[in-house]
Structures are given as structure tokens and as C-alpha cells.
Image 1 (cartoon, rainbow, N blue to C red):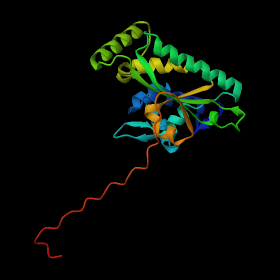
Image 2 (cartoon, rainbow, N blue to C red):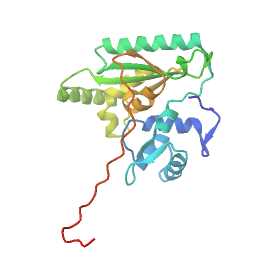
Image 3 (tube, rainbow, N blue to C red):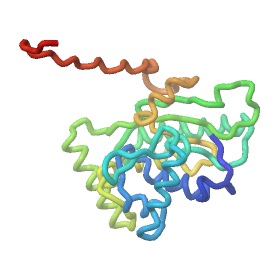
Image 4 (cartoon, rainbow, N blue to C red):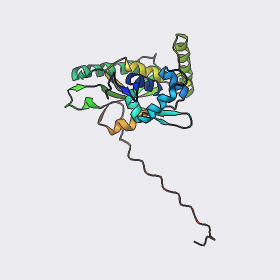
Length: 240
């Protein structure tokens, strides 16, 4: 997906909206305060932004004073504002990305590993000569199999990064420091690679034309079956 870098979304600059959604796109619910922090707006200004994002279908309510990204919101957050590129440029960017995948999996510094890479989108349409971006979804997992040890190593990394000046906006960013660090490295500041979290966007990715570059292939989930209505039983003495 490509967005106009000079365009607006419900009156808000497109690039600012994309940046905000990227910062919020952890797969967890977030609050008004976290939105205002992600959008770099003053306290009290976030309500108007929430209404704008709701009207565009980019977020949805997740309870009282809590929201999360919709599928449209996640797609928008990974959209590019760069100019279209040739297939040769796209292929080069993809190979460089796969090189970063190999580096993550082989370098002991990284606490996470890439277990699945799925290519989808316009890259798989040979009739498209100039591409807006290269859509890639990745699935990550901790390298340490033991949950307690993996969590301890993650906290050590978060503390180290904080000591070096990195600012975590909330405890979830600290809790998933290992994931965010790997995800950011894989993106590599590339303006061509549009990186998606496979775990969060699995349904969308598998329903689109796609190709598995690493890991096992999976089938697209079928339509959800409607819940069977529960019929109340009439009392024995009911006359009708």
C-alpha cells in the first residue's frame, strides 16, 4: 500500500498518522495517554485523533478507554510514502532483507529468531512493472526456549538499552523488547520493505496471493462458524 506523503487522514497529516499507528502497533490494547505519547501531542488533544481514526476504520474500541488497531490500521501503518521502484530495485531490497534475516538467526546478540518469512502483495504480480513496496510478513520467536530464562534475558537487554538512552513508552515495550529490536533491525530503515507481523496479520496475509520464503506453509483460515444459539428449556409446568 502506498500513501500520499502530503495527504491527510480525516484532517491529520498522513505521515503523522502512519507514524502513530506504527508506534501503537504492538498487537495489544492501548490507552488515550499512550496514543498521545505515540502521536507526540499534548494531553487532551488525543480525543480528537481517536475520533478521526475511528471514523476512518483504522482503530476500534477494545473496552472502556482502550483501543487497538484494525486490519486496515495495521495495513496503513506499514504503507510506504516513497516513490514507486523498479523490479530490479525491489529484488535488491528483498535480497538485502533476507540477508538481515540470516544475520538475526545467526548472531547471538539478537534474542529473537525469524521462524517464518512470507512474501505477498504486488511483488507477486508479474504484470506490475513498478512497485510501491515489497510486502513481507515475518514470524518471530525467542531463541531461548525456557520462558523464565528468556524473560530474564529480555529484561537485561531492556535495562541495558534504557541505560544507553533508549526510552520505552510503556511496560509492553519493555516486555517485548526482544521482539521490537529484531523487528526494527529487519526493517533496516528500508523505504522499499513494508514489514508486517505475521502473528498479527496472518489471516490477511494468507488470504492474499503469497509465497513462503522461510518456514512451513499454512492454509488460510476458513470463515468462522456462527455461534449456535442457546435454546432455553421451558419449565415442566409451563402451559404453553
